[in-house]
Length: 635
Image 1 (cartoon, rainbow, N blue to C red):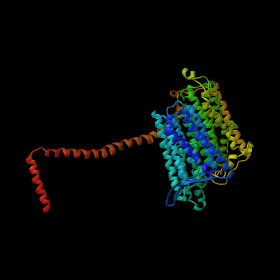
Image 2 (cartoon, helix red, strand yellow):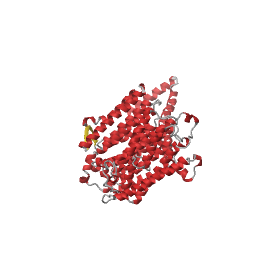
Image 3 (cartoon, one colour):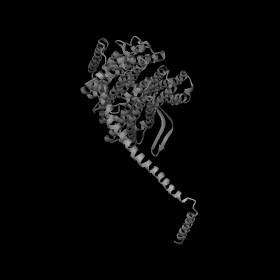
Image 4 (cartoon, helix red, strand yellow):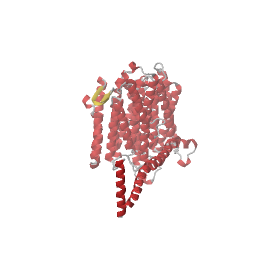
């Protein structure tokens, strides 16, 4: 099995190379088969790796020495342990379903072959990120997914707004990447290595200064903030909805945005040494969760609602990480990959049926025309809202329980508020879109149809995972399935510590866990019932943009954060660039170059007057030259 591990990332890379070089001349079915087939084989190999890791432990494969400079030695090598193989299954499994869905969704696009090439390159980069055994390989994959996100978000680059969204994502990610790079430098300076096993093994012998550890963890977290869209580096993700819907599902639900969660979970031995850094992680995650949720309450673009939902859920995962509940965060990463990919692809099915329409105010009553899409959307909405026994119910409840144990009732209440807001805007999205009367045009109504099988089958598979995924890590007191199975599997690499604020790990009594679960579940059910009454029975509709006032307008305009960033950063940068262009480029550099050329031209024009054909001038010149030559030799 060890020799086959390099095939897992390199098969998608082969798909990228083949489709990128020759796909233009091939049929779309061939391109789709190559793009999806290579990923299917990677998934099957990942399953085989999972079985071997579960049976015998981690697998370490060294391909070659990539770099050796003085004491720095970096191998191009893979570490397939419990954490990385878990992420490999998510990336390749959910990624394969999205590839299959894309065959139908992108079938009429002229850039079909290029789209699949980009998707395969993205999967290769993501696998490199999670499989590398050192921080340098992680950084290569980190930058690779950043590049691919730029290419995929701006896939329809002829639209200037889409191109701007791609640039915005690229630039904001670079801000976070600088923090990650500085963190890697400081880790090497402190521990003398960038390989995970060496770093973690040297923690006790090096005994680093607490201030240094806090600085390292915060720098790594800056990188995670950029990639996982946390305040203040979150505004790129909602704008990234400019890309095709499968891109939204792949990048912004299941893979790329969870890279920051993976980074913190992978480096959990470092974070356990810095309670201050964990407190910052938890605080930023909590603020982001509530902030993005409030914005999502008044968004009317079906994909923008899901985008802010993603930001909010990522914030909840960081709350879990900040509380030392690393396994709980990874559990929610898993369930979120299922139901958020389901919701994004379901939204794509709706957009496909509506001829590109994304405003939910122009939809309504779609459950009759799109029955399969409707029911899978119900599953996804209820799963993310915390409906009993669905995937999100178990993962969110575990986060809330660990938050209560480590942070107390205040942290638990605020985290629960973020979860409650999620249920509100998701139920609003479901009932406004699929209930009531159809509010689109007559032409849209005439062309309403369910998506083809190549699109609905992946939806059904994801719906099944969204129902059953929670049983991967059920709590002990429920006595369902194998309690805490996922936690036991990940324990050699990642385990919950609940040490966010120092002291010994906290464990809740069963009665307290029952009470917390009953309370949050009752609130979620109450929100679903009230939302159904408001949006399905009374058929209340979101207000028009011109009628928005006060808090409604503030939330609809996303707290004017983009406008503030434009005022503070974008416009000053543009002004400085314009000044530098004029004074440094046009006036100084161009002026110097053009001035030299103009001076020579003027001198040439003056000397040309000497060449007038008059022999007397020529004789005079010869005499003067001879005199000067004589004087020079004499002197």
